[in-house]
Length: 119
Image 1 (cartoon, one colour):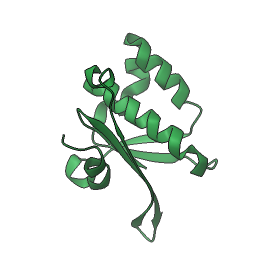
Image 2 (cartoon, one colour; image 1 turned 45 degrees about the horizontal axis):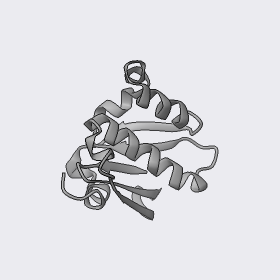
Image 3 (cartoon, rainbow, N blue to C red; image 1 turned 30 degrees about the vertical axis):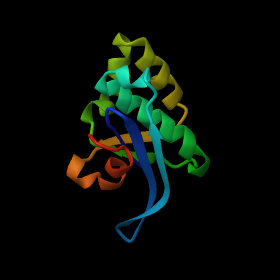
Image 4 (cartoon, rainbow, N blue to C red; image 1 turned 45 degrees about the vertical axis):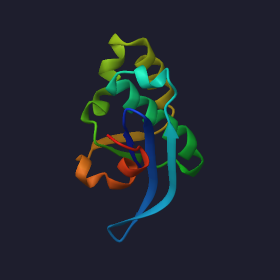
């Protein structure tokens, strides 16, 4: 799975790797509400991660799900949640999924970037 957030929307793509190639399964995009547009960058990214995880969870098995994001602080969501109640709630919810969050540069995170609108 890959996710991205911008100032106006979140985007995600669920894919399966076959013979080293990523094959898209589902796409997801959501425009942020007026309230959500006031979130900090890490909150927008964390919200996008949780929103995509909720939507795509029906496809998850018991195997770990690798999440690619161009926002590297999401790799440290558990440590950041000690300072922000919203991130704490989202981190606790995301723990019910077996997620491995990895950084992928923005230029390589093309599909979610297209779905999230202007960055």
